[in-house]
Length: 532
Image 1 (tube, rainbow, N blue to C red):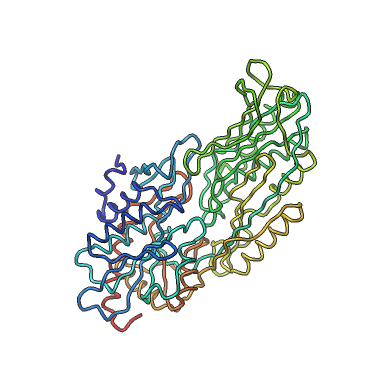
Image 2: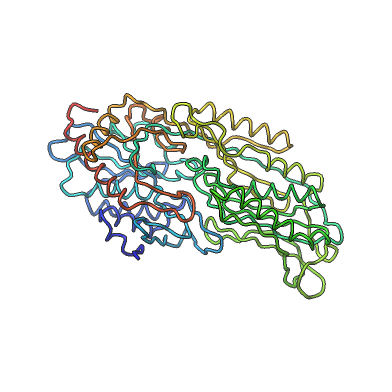
């Protein structure tokens, strides 16, 4: 079994050596400084010019090969940061710990965390191109942006005129054999409210409910697969139980990233003692129903209800979340009590509050009924999602409620319209909501000269044409087109599975093919003196 320490033994060696370095240097969004510093030092040793712009993006420049100086330049583009997700029970600090990557059956995989192949492989390919001996190429610029996964801040902050090339190759898509020539735009919808709190009635017992075992995934690319959203399932269960007994809601937490389908969610609530004692049958029924519903797409879904056992303590009650690195949340509940012993504790012996009884129903109704999933499929690209929303992060703690939706569409107007509906829907439940972080999509240009050249090269290298596609995800091409409208752009990449979720993997063979294609395209551009 190959581990991170010797990924560089894979082929092509230069690409995998760079990727191994990326696995060693932590790079969550907003924490790319260490990697950027390393790459600047790497470039200096090789005589490659490096520039850091006002947004924190890193631009690496290499002159054209001899005889190619007058040819228009080409830009290779990717992003430095990665989505940080880990399975429950996995202690991984994404700001300090390296990614543990292994090789299994022709794939490089991180078994309990995200791998960062999105977009570490694209970055590795670009860096390998900068140092490849004998590669004939036009003037090269490598643009490595920051904070792509958290709002595309780097691309958003790129000043007009920063880039000098005429063509751009984005290496941030995840299905080999396709040229991507368009992508979805997006906008976030933020929701918040401060709920009134009240003491629990006497004789109530506190329980913890958890939805886990879901696959999650990319909130754009995987949204059409019908996988379970842990937040939505938890709200469904809580509404069902509230219809049969007097459930009091203390806290909810679910999801860790707006652009990832939530895999886990938990709630702490209080029930009348008789209801709590007899909850096992309801729990089993709910679990079995979900296992049947998601048998084809999320067979490992689990649902557990257990008593909260409180250690002897005196003082104030509190609900919190202990974070083991970014993406791993463990609930912590501390309740003062009288006397000793373990088990349930009646509310008259603890100091604990839940949100106001009347507000419980409207909160759960909002979560359960809000738009989530595919809203519209594309008319122009069969099988591609046109418009969607994802309830990615939610928290209710000590009455303070926050939630974030990621809305995407191939048509910017449709994304805006769906976001407006979510804002209005939240308002109808008395919740404050607003739009934030909008970015444009990338409009396809089937007449692109760059596309024509890349198709010629692909067919020559692999004996068949690549298919053309748009992606229901937010590439930075839309923002780059806004600041540099002259650019002729295309995107391709290797096969990546499970981006934005633990178990993310990348196929080794497809990385080799991407490297072969990238070198061939650069050499074709160098020879095409009348071009682009």
